[in-house]
Length: 371
Image 1 (cartoon, rainbow, N blue to C red):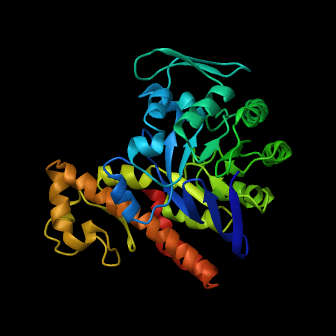
Image 2 (tube, rainbow, N blue to C red; image 1 turned 30 degrees about the horizontal axis):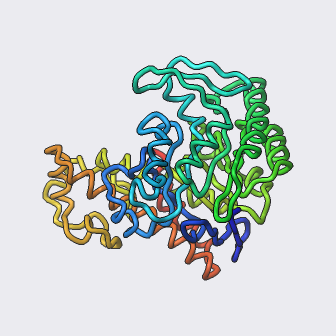
C-alpha cells in the first residue's frame, strides 16, 4: 500500500507527497523513462543529480530481455541498474500493441511474437503482475488493452470493457505490501461516457492510484486537454493521478492545471539524442548552422554540466560530427530542464502563484506543440 497526501491545491492543480518502499516523491513529478533498465545516454548518478526521484521501467521489454526472472536473481531492478529510488513499471500493454509482431487478443490475454527474435509469448494480467513483482516495482500498473487512434466508438468500448475486466484480475493477482502499490488505468478514448464508465469500474475495484491512458496518441493538445477537463477531476481526490506518456512541457503545465500529479515521457531523452534542447526560451535544434560560432551556453538559467561547461558552438560540433558526447550532454540537459520545470511548478503552487506561472509559461512555450 502506498501513502499519498495532497498538501496544497489551487483550482484543480495539486501539490502532494507520495511515499513508497524506496523513497518519498514530491508531486507534481516527472519520471524519466528507463525502458530497459537504463535512461538512455545517462548514468543513474547523473539522473539523480537532476533531482529525479522516480524513474519508469517497462514490463514488455524486460520480460523479453534479460527476463524478469534474471533481474530478480540480481535482487530486483533497483539493484540490477543501481537505482535506489522508486521505480514505476508500466504493464506492457501498449508495447504489445505497438511493437510486437503477429498478435491475438483473447479474454485470457495477448499472445504475441517478440519484436526481438519472433518467439511466441502470452502476456496476461496475472503474468504482468508476476513480472512487475519480480522486478520489485514500487508502483505496478494494471494490464490493459490499448487501441489505436482514431477508432470507432464500438471498438473503443469493447477494448475498455475488456481492460476493466483485466484490471479486476490484476488487482486479484497483485501482492499487496507496505510501500508498494497498484494503479488502475482509465481508458475510453475520446468518449466522455466511456471514460466515466471506466472510472466507475476502477474505483469500484479500488486502486492505490489512477492513471489516464489512451492520450498523447495523435489527438492533439486541445483534444487531450478537453478529455482531461472531465477525466482528472472525476478521479478520487485522495489518490495520485498519472497521465501516461505525456509529454511536451506545455502538455505537462496544462495537465497539472487540470489536476494531474504524475508524468512520464521519452521526449527529453529522445530529443537529446536527436539534437533538440528544451530551454527557458524555447526549443533549440543544435544541428542548425546558426549555432556554429555561438559562444553562449544552451540556457543561461540552467546549471547542468552542458550549460555550465560547454558552448552551443561545441555542442553543435558534436552533433555535426556524430560524437556520442553530444547525446549525453543534451539528454542530461533536457532531463534537468524537465526536473527544474517540475520544481518551478511545485514552488508556484506552494507560493500561491500557479495561475500566473501557468499563463506565462503557456504563452512562452505554446510553440513546443509544433516540434
